[in-house]
Structures are given as structure tokens and as C-alpha cells.
Length: 391
Length: 87
Image 1 (cartoon, rainbow over the protein chains, first blue to last red):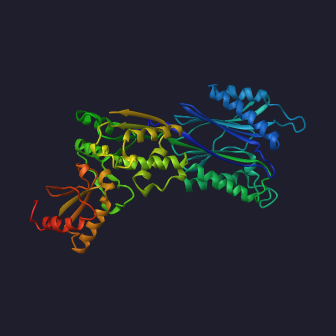
Image 2 (cartoon, rainbow over the protein chains, first blue to last red; image 1 turned 60 degrees about the horizontal axis):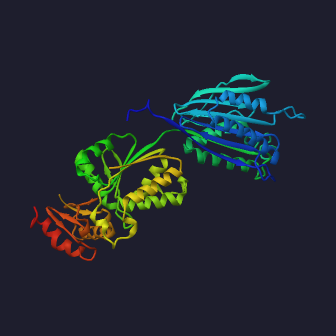
Image 3 (cartoon, chains in turn yellow, blue; image 1 turned 135 degrees about the horizontal axis):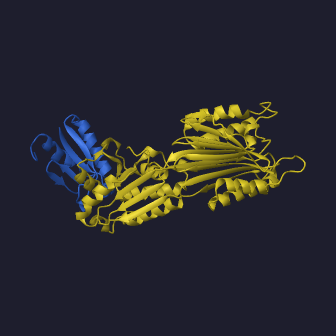
């Protein structure tokens, strides 16, 4: 579809930390602040380790994230923190270093780095060189980056503990920024998803340290993605005279289109003239099969599939990796589509099928509307924007 | 090629539509009908209270069960393929 210009972007953030050996607390703190048009991430590294470092980095990250949450401009926020951060008397370095990145929904990114390792920016799966602008604020040297990100670009922020991995042990001087950068590039190309990349790199860091981390280590991965929309049409409209109007509206909506329900798919088929094809070879006793229809991404049976989808979503607790494989059945396909989505819209028909009024049926099949509402509740808990309209 | 449609919607699914599909496919194998008969799935052929529904030409068969599926195949589908009814 040619809606490139209008595509809004979002940032998926995932991070992993290791504590310095023997410490109960991590001296690095990560805070993520999301609002309707941007996502900000703060990584702060407190001086030293353990409780002291933890308090210092928490304080820094908390000041920054609270100000950003309240809508303060990025540079005012930086100024406030710089003014507030004391300098260690002995070592003449600040109590806490930090990196802040703000990614707007048009892909514009601003990054301020104060004494943390340089960020790794990967555009179109290639590590890109960004020349920062240097700025001195109250005697502190800040590096400021302005750049444009697109869908499936990545930014990695790290504390120096990541780069020192292996220091004095497996790798004499640690593995260093160059190696970390090229490894991040390689692994990003392989996985194209932020969580497996961060997990993989942090496992490597752990191995380089021989399982005994000499410093707190944090790696934050940020992946820019298009905002995913999905629209689900389930159940025939109460008044059959509305069928055409509702179907036309459904077919015009942007995003992934899903139909749940036999009668519903027949109505769409009648009005659009596109037939539903079902692969009968894939029929099994577990759930009714899925169908294919032109201009619709997924066609499934109704209540049984919705009930199972609800169960899958509830069981996974918001973690996509705990969902059953996507191609298992119609419900697993729908669950994956919903988990990937940022905005979901349900069009729920209210016409009842007399068959479902049969008291001999399992209660789970009884009312479609209830099941949709339970799914909507779960999706809202996962932080998605969900709309529901009854027709 | 002639086609026979088996409803796989909610009601029919609960009453064993998948087993009927398996039985029909075995029968097609047995009679070597794979080139003559196209077995189709449908999400809802209506008549949900009389599930499972099988559509053979113009005839809508109701209350097909895994138990009577063999008989339905022999007595309805085979004659239909031979052109004896429901053109």
C-alpha cells in the first residue's frame, strides 16, 4: 500500500544488565518514557558499584525521565541534570554518566551522550557513522547527535561495562568499541529483532568476563518500527441492511485485516465478490482451519478461534516468545497478529446465531461479544490502543 | 471436476466435521477419485443446528456424522459423481 509518508513510527526498547560480581544491585539504570508522539530512553551509569552506584544512577535517570515525562525539552532536562550532578572530589569525574535518546514518531532522533560509550546506530542493517556535535555545558563535554531513523533501524546504547568485557582475562584490553560495533551489526543482520540481539551480545559479554563481571554492564537496544494497525471484523451486523456499509468500511480501513467467523466471511465474500478458499488438507480436530481471501490477511472461524486466541494471549503474559508457533492454527496466527499490533480495532456484529442458544453447547462458545471484550481487556493491559464498535 | 463442500464452521467443527473430511479423503483414495472430485471446505453453509452440513451439488445434506459418513459417501457422493442425481 502506498501510505509511506503517513506511516507513523514507534520504538521498541529492550535491555539487559549484568551486575558487577558480588553485587546485589546494578549500578546502571535504564528508564523508558513513552508518550503519544515520542519515546525516550535514558541509560545512566553511576560511579563505582553496588548500592552507591545504584542510587546515583537511579537519581540521574529518574530526574531525566520525570522531566521528559512532564514534557520538558530535552536540552533543558540535560542542563538541569548537569547542574545537579556533583563531581567526585578525588577522581574529578562526575558521579554519574548518561545517554539520552529521544525518537519521534516521524523518525527524527536526538541523542545526548555524556561520557558513556558512543552509541551504535544501524541503518538499513549497516552500522552508520554519525558525527556528533560537541557542546560544553557548565564545563562538561556533551556529544549531541541528530539523525533520521526509518522503520527497522536500530540504536544501541551501552555502559562501559559492556566494552570492558574480558579485560585482563580472555581479552587483554576488553573487546572494545570497534569489535562490539561490528558484532552488533552482524547479529542485528541475523536476527532483525532487538531482543535476541541484546540477549546474544550480553551472553557473549558474560562469557568474555568468564562469568565474573568486572563492572556493571548494560546494553539497551532500540528498534524503530512502523506503527502496526489491525482491524478485526467478527460477527454479522444486527441489521442485514447494514452489511454492505460495514463491509465497505472494513475493506477501506488501513492495516492488517482479519475476519473471524463463518457467516461474517460469507457476508464479506458476497459483497466484495472475493471467495474464501480453505485448504482442506490442513484440517485437524483441534480448531477449524484458516481460509484465504483476496485483500484480507486472515480468515478464521469465529468463537472457537477467538476463545483459543484469548487463552494464548492470557498464557503468554505479554511475551511474544511464549506464544505457540504462528502457523499452528488460526488462533495462534491471530494471537501473533494482535501481539505485533500497536492499534487494534474490533468491529463486532451483534446478530446472534440461533445455534449458539443451544444449552447443550460448551459455555465457552456462547457469546462472541464477551470473548471479544476479554481479548480487548488483555490487549489494553499490554499497552495497546484498542477500539471496539458494535454493528 | 465435481465438487463436494463440507462445512467446517463452529457448529460443524464441534460435531466432528474434521473427522468427516478424513473419512471422505480416505474414501476418495480408496475409489481413486482424486482427479474426479474436489473436496472443498466452507466456513458456514447455514443450518447450524443440523450440523454437520455437506453440500453435494444442489443438495444440502444435514446431520452428517462421522458414524454415517461412509454411508453418505457410498449412497450420495458416488451416485452424484456418476451423474445419477443433482446435476
